[in-house]
Image (tube, rainbow, N blue to C red; front, side, top):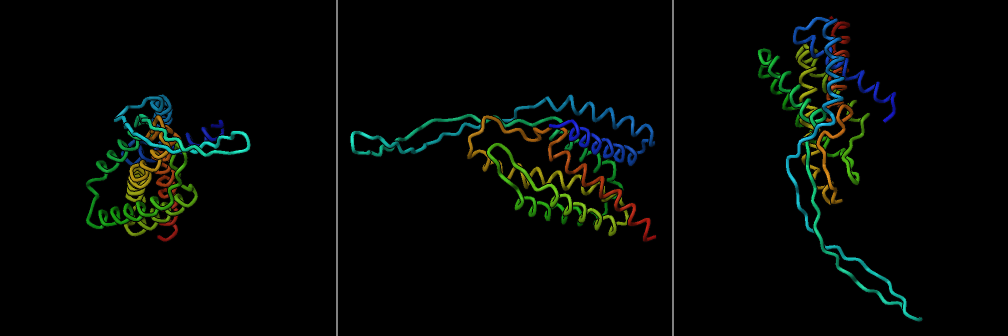
Length: 237
């Protein structure tokens, strides 16, 4: 990964954690300082992974072999049998950190939760699940999503929810948590069987660390949603 990309990703995460800390009551300068420290710690934690299971898969593969003897060519069909182990691991930064952040965000805003809030939360989550599940790109050893489409959709949903609730803060929480859950379920969980068809040795959920979609996409979309909502609401009031 290039240095420019690393710096850009870290900048997104710093801004995200600064907003998050400010919303839980930390003042601006301290929030910036703490967010810088958090991002540095995330780089260290990104090298830590926990194995949750090992999948043993057996396979039967047919192959055809052409054998030339003199002027004749013979086709021989061969059957290969074997088994392979796939280790499934969870990355601390890419999986556990956004899970912990989601819990903190929901708990810290629990006093603001209303029936309208729950309805919007569930509606956005279900919509994201459907769309993300359809947009998933399955590679040999990875799962991916078209970043531009996902960001545009998520930010649009976030701004609409902010306008309905009249609260950029609530939209910030909703978009981070729903995007994280939709990515985890709609991309990783529902499509893990697609990756297993390639018999990989390792499947790392959140394995990209700071750059993993499970952390980066929710952080980026919720941060843009928050600032865009603030701007729109300030212009309309």
